[in-house]
Length: 119
Image 1 (cartoon, rainbow, N blue to C red):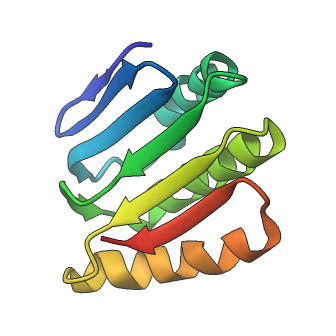
Image 2: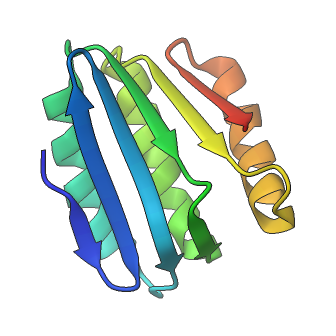
Image 3: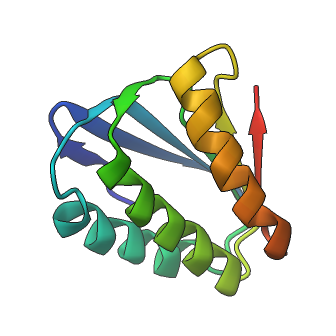
């Protein structure tokens, strides 16, 4: 699995056995991140199917604009539909992360395979 590098946003993916860790680092400030993120995240879903658990950490993300939310929601839905057990974590001490991810946490109530929690 490849990492994503579109400075100032970096997504690092590391696999160890049946666990995959994805860390979002830096800032997502692109006006239309869907153009680059959607194809990258879609390719990861195919790679992750049937390969254990995924943890996505957003705690190192310094900033995310509202345009970043739709690609994340689409990714969450595809992970859920692909039966990829996923835990999404964020920093609850960060006000903007708490607000953004509480909204995403609400979406997971209707998902079987994706959860969101502050850590």
